[in-house]
Length: 91
Image (cartoon, rainbow, N blue to C red):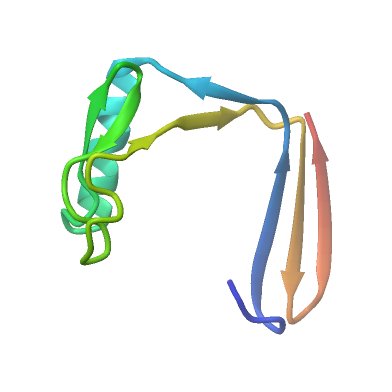
């Protein structure tokens, strides 16, 4: 949320590892296409995603490679806005 007085900000700390599993990348590409009504479409190419359609109405994403990373949380911080609460979880 981009406002200062409501919502929740979450920070996840941990090691970021590149995801190259093509089956997982395919599922992610399908999920993003569904979420964004087909506006974000990717093909899996050599362990990365490659833009298949124009992103955001222009050619910015067309043919570009998108690397995917996953983070296994070691610490999560959550900051509630409005009531201004904080929570920390360590794993």
